[in-house]
Image (cartoon, rainbow, N blue to C red; front, side, top):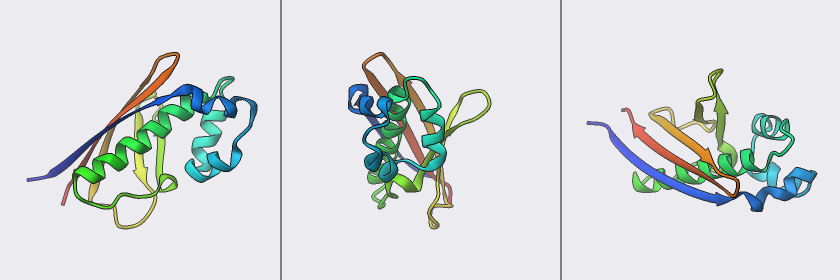
Length: 122
């Protein structure tokens, strides 16, 4: 029987507003992959996209905690969208091949939220 963990996180988009002006790059490079930054910073107002991806990483880390398993670091988690816009996550660090991650992201004008389910498949 597969084991699963769930996690949820909500972030204030205002925390990421400095990024709209290109500020706080040390934080961004510590948390996000190049692919994520390229995607988010391609928007006129990237803060909502950065906040949603940060919330997703937090939700995934919380889901690992509910599995009683040490989670990856922020930059080891990469959030992307498929051609239909559906978000997905992958772990870039070895040792996590036995997991499947389902993810849902949303945002309003002021907050971004993410819900993650991590299932151990083996």
